[in-house]
Length: 386
Image (cartoon, rainbow, N blue to C red; front, top):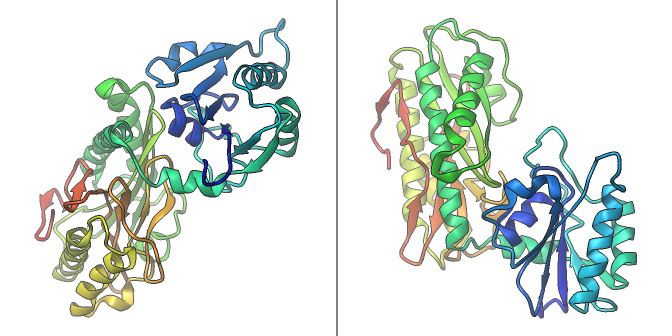
């Protein structure tokens, strides 16, 4: 903040409220304030008081919403912001806000994501009587490094996702639809994840691909379909899971029956590429070097032409984050505390899409695997698994 000439931050996007206070808003009316002199301040609807327990904000204020006798929620929040500005001497100073995020994580109410709009930005400037500037680049940079409390919660998110992966493997059977398998995964995450390690709110979004769709659709995040699994099918799941505002991103493969040699060969090569990429990860290594390590393995196996996307991306406060970016053109350097996906893949006409994805913590000594379930095919661990 001093480097950017900022005296304070006011964040309202749910993912940044999590960043500053550890609290995942239920609806999109909360705000987090951070000043140079004081720890985080949390402003939230009073109807969420039950959910605020566990936030690490030093100062918490609630305001009324949505009863017949209550003022407009924005007016109530503005009143609190004005009080905070007066108490902490923010009027006339330089304040950053999170206004330029185009990809955003939802609140607990995923049906109604919330984002800044012109009216709330204008209201912020008027209420604070301050020079407000978009601090998105600073926040993106700050979010790249996870601290021990964040890492602990990302590990829990991966454990919660593991319940979904258990359901995925248990659901792979002839006659089931992709949608039915996805529903079983999401149900397991909600049912078993809620309460796990103190988790208050767990959700999952699973996309299941089977048959030839694994080639044409499995890197495009399309919707689950009513296609029924066939005896010869190999199936892929792309899984996002969130536990109290912390996210993970995993991909696994399964099959209805024992797979043929070619599919097993490609899956083994993808796992070997992932293993080499993970082995390369440590603080101080260039992100492009990790990507190159994965590609080198697939090149040796004559499969590099089928690896058409990046090797990994940041994850934690959102399902996809831009730092680190494990890509051939990346100029980023890995730093201890970063959390990244590692997801090499091969997409071929005769095999379909084969991808394995885990989440990894960067440390000074190397990489720590955060994912809770090792990769496998048809219920068995396979060679190359970490």
